[in-house]
Amino acid sequence: MTAVEQYLKPELAAQIKRLDLRAQMVVRGFLQGLHASPFQGFSVEFSEHRRYVPGDDPKDIDWLAYAKTEKYYVKKFESETNLTGYLMVDLSQSMAYTYRQQLTKLDYSICLVAALSYLMIMQQDPVGVVTFDTKIRASLPPKSRKGQLPNILSLLTKIKATGQTDIAAAIKQLAAMISHRSLVMVFSDLLGDTKEALAALRLLRFSGHDVIVFHILDEAEVSFPFSGNVLLADPESGQSMPVDADVVGQQYRDEVAAYRDELKNACAEARIDYVPLDTGMAYDKALMEYLLKRRDRG
Image (cartoon, rainbow, N blue to C red; front, side, top):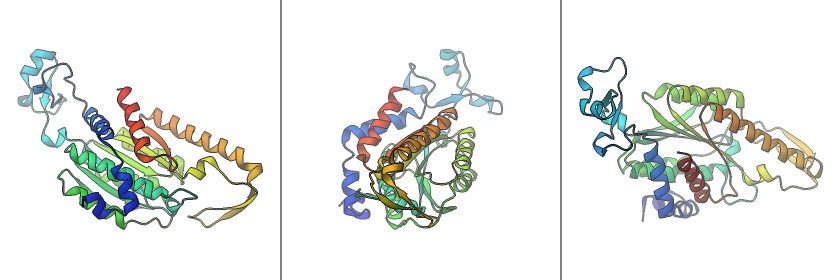
């Protein structure tokens, strides 16, 4: 029995196992690309360098690299060469919602987190998981050893969606915990204070971190497949509203599309990757499509 099969419930284990070899190769290539070596086209012996900046010890300058590039580079320390990943999972009550799909939004997030954790560990990059609602609830520090995967999967099986959310507060908490450049991936339905959440995400990006936002909605939250008189309820506040689905359906779909476009544009301005997903998409296919797009645009 694999670690995935041991720690995840059967339906989620089946989803993880669907990440086939081609997808693994794509993800590994994507992660390798984030290492961003400045020595493309040069010998592999210069692959682990970074540009010299004031304050670096001049004794660390690699003069052979200077002879090839006429630029000053210093060799990276091991802690600088590995890409550290933090995967943030939203635990708010709204993440427990599903209308007709097998997976809730939280289940869908777990599938993505488990797959990316596995692939980062195979890449020998440290990866950790942070869960949050109004604040960080659990934090598994990043590690790259293979024993980290069972730790991550064990944590994922214990989490439950409950309560309200404050995405901005949790992101600011994480930002204070990170000591060097990292890759931060956020998995959330973003049903909260969008303005504050975007400001916190910009803070992460402007601090030098790579940021990817996986915006996960239920398929019904996107397509609005309802008809007649329905009662719509907010799972976090408990407030409800009766509506005529036939009257408001198209307006609702237009507003969701506009909201996603707003998030996409705001993230693009801050050089943050925005990935809109819904639970009607096969998670492995959706993940691979995103990674292919990111790889192709270099």
